[in-house]
Structures are given as structure tokens and as C-alpha cells.
Amino acid sequence: MLEENGISCNADHILLTPGGKNAIYLAVNAILNPDEEVIVLDPSWVSYEPIIQAAGGRCVKVKLDYQTQYRITKEKLEEAYSERTRLLIINYPNNPTGCILHEDEADILEAFLLEHPEVYLLSDEVYETLVYDGNKSVSMAARARVSERVITVNGFSKSAAMTGWRMGYMVSNEEVFKTAYKLYTHSLSCMSGFLQKGAVHAFACKRETEEMRRIYEQRRNMFIGILNGTKGVHCNLPEGAFYAWVYFDVKGMDSFAMCDYLMENAGVVGMPGSAYGEESVCCMRFSFAAATEDLERAAKNIKAAIEKLG
Image (cartoon, rainbow, N blue to C red):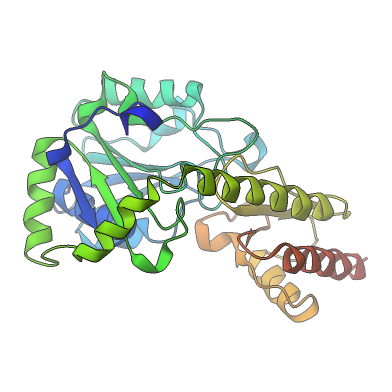
């Protein structure tokens, strides 16, 4: 972790889990007391809020703006903060928007944590190897002044295409690790040994991982290029992950209606933006982790269906 993202950690504080989702579940339950609050940046992955609720906490949404490409601001964080705030969850590269964490936003997060020393930060970085155009997403645990209060969650599902293996992990300070480990041992016992041995080999697959990232980048450019050639459709190039977050400027249609329309008229399935907390504009999430020819056909079908609306 030190070589790839600047995180200095103790091997004794790395907890292997069946997927990154379980690592998030354990971390949230290790930190929260009943009725404490967790700040989540919207649009956000759909499981954060239910996990917080299952831990007896309250999810406080920070609505980031489509018009500013969902950039973090100090003002929005402070508006969401209260004396009951215990945790802030971030996800970069982001599902669903494809945004990465830039240095200036990391500065804002670091300042927020320094201002509120009782708050932990959980950084979900499961897409960290899938970043494009020569960019790099910042890992908050690499910031020495706040590293002790950052829990980093990662896994092999996305970076090594090992989704079915369910191999994730969390890295934290000793206090959080010990509490999470107690929950772990009385619910899961351990990860299968042969899965761990298989995952070790993923670290030796840097060439294959880079080839996968390069192919995703090509698919991204093709898919979004076709969509952006359609009147009433716009998509910023995602900086990371493998999702196209597509805006539709079609009068009278929200994201659920657009989802149904494209399924029926284009034969393409996407996720409505409202499922991720985006209610202000009509956005949909499409995955480009699919065969290139299928993606090209899907993009052309979407284009034809939107043009049919006039």
C-alpha cells in the first residue's frame, strides 16, 4: 500500500473480508454508537445508508452538484456536521459518477478532520487501479496528519476482476481494528485459505491489470463519444471506475422514466440516478465493463431512441 498509494500501515491492522462491502459494514459498526451520525456524499453507492441504519446510526446526506462535477466544498461539509457526527464516508474513484479525489478536495477533507478530531473518515477505494488519462486519485490515509483516523477499504473484485471470489480488506488504526476484529470472529471466523493464496497472485499481475485498465479507457472513449454526439445527451468523461454517468435533457422525464424508456426502446439496461441520490437532474449510470461490440451497439441504440423522441 505504501508503494501504490502512500499509505503506511501495520500488517497486523489489515483485516481480510468477504468483499469490500463486509469491510465497510464492520468498520461502520466498530465506530458508531446508537443515534450517531455519518456524513455521506451524494450521489453515493446504494449500500452506505442501509449499513449505517443497520448499525443504529443516522445517515446525513451531502448533496454535491452536477453543475460543478460533484466537487467537495468546505461549506457543504460544515453544514452537514453536528456534535453527533462520528464518521464521514467517501468513495473515490466514485460509483456512480466516475469522479476521482483531487488534491484540492483532499485538502478540504484533511482540514475538516483536523477541525473535528472526533470524526473518522472511511475511504472506499475499491476502484483505485481504474483511473484514466494519467490521473491519480488521492488516498486520504496517505495524509500523515489524519492517517490515524482514516479507515481504507479496498478489494480485488474490480482491480483484478475477481468479483466472485469476494476478497476485500480494511486498514485502520489499532482501536478500530480490534473492535472490527471482534465482530468479524463472531460472525465470519476467517477467509478461505485457497482464496487468499489466489489473491496473492493478483499482485504479480500488474501487466494484465494495466491492460484491463487500458481497454476500459478505450471502451469509455467509444461509448461516451457516441452518446455525446446525441442532442439532449451529455456525459463527462469519467476519471475512474467503469461507469458512464449520463445526463439526459428530455422534458418531462425523470431518471426512472428514462430507465424504462431506454429498456423498452433501446434494449439497454441502466440504473436510474435517483437510486444513488441524484434527484435534481435526469442522470443514468451505465457500466462499460462489457464487450466492446455490445457497448457500441448499446450506445447506438440509446442514440436512436433519444433521437426518436425528437
